[in-house]
Length: 78
Image (cartoon, rainbow, N blue to C red; front, side, top):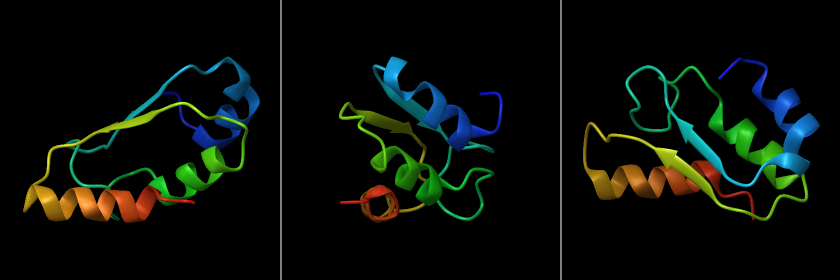
């Protein structure tokens, strides 16, 4: 919520019990219209020892199933 997401995540991950994200603007699909680079954020999460859930709140503007598949491809770092 304060910016500098990846550095903050790395410094505080031992204290995180759940990660909840949402796009900006509009909480829409995880794509290049959003201000945050979710591929980079997910890569940073995967590089830590975090083994909890990551929830992403979004409202698809198109086909919801396709949007969910794209979100999974963007965030899958395994």
